[in-house]
Amino acid sequence: MKIVVGIKQVPETTNVKINEKTKNIDRRGISGVINQYDRHALEAAFEIKAKTNAEVIVMTMGPDDFVVSLQEALALGADSAVLLSDRAFAGADTLATGYVLSEAIKKIGDVDLVLLGQQSVDADTGQMGPIISEFLDISQVTYASKLDVEEGGLRIKRYLENIEQDITAKLPVLVTVTDQANDPKYVNIVEIAKSFEKEVTTWHASDLNLDADRVGQAGSPSVVRSISSPKEVVKDNYKLPDNPQDAADELVKILKDKNILVEDK
Amino acid sequence: MDQKTISQDILLRMVKAFVKNEVAPYDMEIDHTRSYVNNLWSKVKENDFLSLMLPEEYGGAGFNGRTSAKVINEIAKGNASLAVTLEGHFKSVDQIVKYGNDELKNEYLPQAKNRIIAFSMTEPSGGSNPMGINSHAEKRGDKWIINGDKIMITNGGLAEIYCVLVKTAPDELSFFVVDNEMEGFEYGKQENFLGLTGVPVGEIVMNNIEVDESHLLGKVGMGKEIGDSAHDDARVLMGAVLTGIMEHELDLVTDYATHRKAIDTPIIQMQGIQRKIADIAISKETTKLLYQKAAWMKDHGQDYEEEAAMAKAYGSRSAVKAGDDSLQILGGYGYSLDYPIEHLIRDARAMEIAEGTVEKMRTAIALKEAESRA
Ligand SMILES: Cc1cc2nc3c(=O)[nH]c(=O)nc-3n(C[C@H](O)[C@H](O)[C@H](O)COP(=O)(O)OP(=O)(O)OC[C@H]3O[C@@H](n4cnc5c(N)ncnc54)[C@H](O)[C@@H]3O)c2cc1C
Ligand SMILES: Cc1cc2nc3c(=O)[nH]c(=O)nc-3n(C[C@H](O)[C@H](O)[C@H](O)COP(=O)(O)OP(=O)(O)OC[C@H]3O[C@@H](n4cnc5c(N)ncnc54)[C@H](O)[C@@H]3O)c2cc1C
Image (spheres, helix red, strand yellow):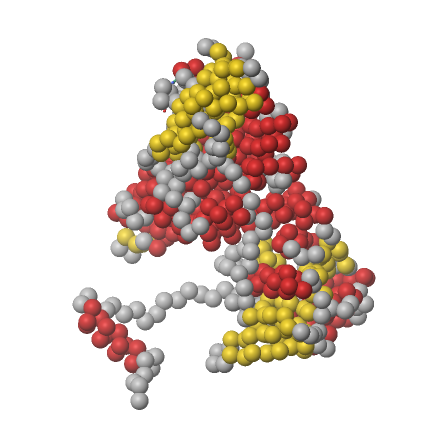
């Protein structure tokens, strides 16, 4: 089985600052890490690899310093890595990013399983999975919280708001993975040096079969009009009485007034 | 980006995540229970923290002095005891790498991945004056017979392998390597220390331990040189531990002072508080620069004795003072055993004594200053 895992390098902090001028995430002075959900996608790939001897290829589109995340994935256990990097890719929205990633997956060829995180923690759209599966014309399962290999495919559990789905998926398939799927391991310190025996291949735009109008800024139909950090606001403060019984009564009253607590009929 | 930079980035990412998830949340519990709770110790071993500085040819990760010191700094931010436990091991591994003969290296260095190595000089008769020790080794045929009592050993009890300072003649100091599987080796009493309570500090007793010539570290009579070399290593790493403690304090005081209000004003707006916070920040940054400079000099083969002594002497007093200021900023909470400030003061205080007292440190610094002008 051949598995491609798409990973994204995101700012380390959850306290993301927006550059008011460029409307982009301000990455100055913030070191990157592998998007947390992608750690779960990688771990899912390693679990499948342990059972089936699958080949795990890790891939990212981004600037050259994303190579740290690829190398980290190699140290964690991926077999090889592909960096998609080109000035022409800059300013890509989700559509243009998905297009390049899907063309790179086609170039690798005979890929049975594409694993992604459920969403990135910086841009946060969750669109990449659906977009790539559409371009590759393969089926997709989003928000997978449990993955097992079965004869000819995968057995996947999705825990949604009101339902739990138990799915059998034939290969090839694209799956986006939640943080419930597994417990990602830390990089073993000694494995870091050894990971340099494995290869990171860089593909530029010219290495792929791309339509120039569909990449980078030119290929991005969506425009970010404005972007801002949420303001911290404090409202509706209540001071409850000191006596626990009175405090509980008062709290129940407040919750009922707000329709948060409703009478059981 | 070159391989060294990438490796260091990956390592520090991993260490930060490890400290955030596995170390920092247990800081108070480690202090109160005097142990590495929640399987922390096995997690440290599983992820090969013990191999951080060990050369690759012995199965280690082979990171340099500066990177290793940064790792110790990150760990100390979460828990200073764990950082000191690793410091004790690293400086000992380093001496075997530096002074061990091939036979000794091949025997012990591959084991350093899983077995802690400790470094013991101090005896009941004293620590500052190595000539005052009573432990001794006697040559019988092609064997050495070692007898003596070593106390206050960092990781004593947890460590399985010990570099021990002994007399090989009335005025001759030498180092040997012994391990807990040898006949005549016994663990003694554990210290009941004030701070760094996660670190086991204990005693070993040696009764006619018989070792081969290969267990001699360096040559006969090199005891002082090897002891000094270990101290230099340790003092750089202690500078890193002290930096981590002050970073921990800064996290606590800035958060508290931003949210705590006096009447309507957050106390961070008040000059008296600002002055304390600024002083802690200056001390932290100075200590950081000192230990990083010393580590850089070590990596480049320069004499870093003075800078290492400065990092520890300046860092330890500053961290104790910073802890005192932090306590004051947190008011009554600062004085509570339920908040971490008080144990950070106790932890920092150990480093005015361990690895050579600050008095000895100042002697070394003053003599170096004179020597450089002679
Ligand atoms: C409307 C819009 C406009 C944008 N404009 C710009 C812009 O002008 N300049 C700019 O720099 N950025 C821009 N971005 C951000 C950038 O294009 C997105 O981050 C990228 O398309 C991925 O989207 P996402 O992070 O929301 O991924 P999601 O769909 O949330 O990510 C899901 C999963 O897809 C995978 N994945 C995501 N990104 C990558 C990647 N690069 N390589 C490999 N795998 C990946 C990961 O497994 C991830 O967990 C824009 C985004 C949007 C939505
Ligand atoms: C947390 C901790 C961990 C330790 N770990 C180890 C370890 O791993 N291995 C090990 O061998 N030891 C270890 N020690 C012991 C430590 O090295 C000694 O405590 C230290 O060297 C001082 O020795 P001492 O306690 O005998 O004090 P003494 O040497 O008796 O000193 C008493 C006082 O006299 C001063 N003094 C002594 N001589 C001089 C001098 N020449 N000039 C100026 N002032 C002087 C000292 O500064 C001190 O203030 C540890 C101690 C602590 C607290």
